[in-house]
Length: 508
Image (cartoon, rainbow, N blue to C red):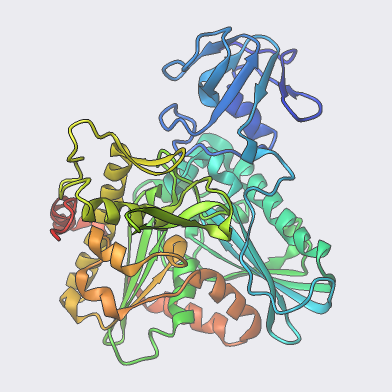
């Protein structure tokens, strides 16, 4: 594909223009300039989420062509457009810098804006889809503020393997630069609301690949057999080494290549290993990671649930941001919904998708195979501009089958039936908003989990915060990581049998 340093791309509503390098697509240009937008497929022309509006200019096409011809105007996938002349484009409104469309204030603050904090600590959870940060007053242990944003690395793909693939293509530095700049911006957010005299510590959790990228370590070895991480242990380093405005940065320990510090923190902060009962932690996000505690042993596994349960790969999907439809139900004969933050709907997140599919099953819109029962039905409308399609139902089936199959194999490995699990902790991207009855109706969770489940939010972030206030917490996490046994689902032939069987929805 052609390109020239003399070619410029102007973005409507922004000052200046972006220069195009030889062989770059529009998505490449936006990536290089630090403009975040969704690209769940990693820019391979499949998902259609990186759409921009071509206002003027000519281009060549790649990756299967675009929705509009060269020289035309209209919406097109940025990864398929290769500029050959100066161009003008428009981005989706939610991507405009300064509007804060990606930022979700999470509440939980106990101090007034403007209040001085003498010793500040920060808890950071780097999720594949969402990054969350919490400010704590280390003198009192109080939470002062919390907020979240979509991970800026998502332009390289929605899931962990997409990010690892990008790293294998030599983009580790770019991925590191993305998350590093985002974390700096998130930390600086608090400077505008409080007087922070001393920024002492940043405690960090996340999956193994995200932690590698956070410290600018190539995670490529996680993408090839035998999936070997560069490090798993807890780490501590000066904030200056990462150009972050804190004295010290500490990473909690991971368990294995695909069982990260987020799970270690979740096991520790729920206290599930401290009680004499069989307990299960399910962290449902881009991957379905889970840990089973039974008779003093910890069994862990990770299922390739895909990003559907965090809104990626869904036609009207979005992460758990302000405006995301997070609950759906039938009320007064019509579909009713709520959004995160109560604002206008911008898309549907994972918990909303679970509710929608449960409602579709209950109303007979789809059958146990996931097929629409209406002869001409193509989608299920939620509200204007937001609907659940046939393809969305299929993506959900793949995700829910991976999760429940992982639960069953993990229990089998520990030598017990699913019914023997006494306590279930639901965490992760769905851990704030998921309705347990909808999860059971769709087959995402076993029916016996109904009265045993506790929806406990972001246990990874809670663990990072606990690291700031409890001197013994780091050692507890290291002990958990050392004791945990990872169950490799791909090596168990029974997993694929379970997966095929669990693609069907439960009969009502």
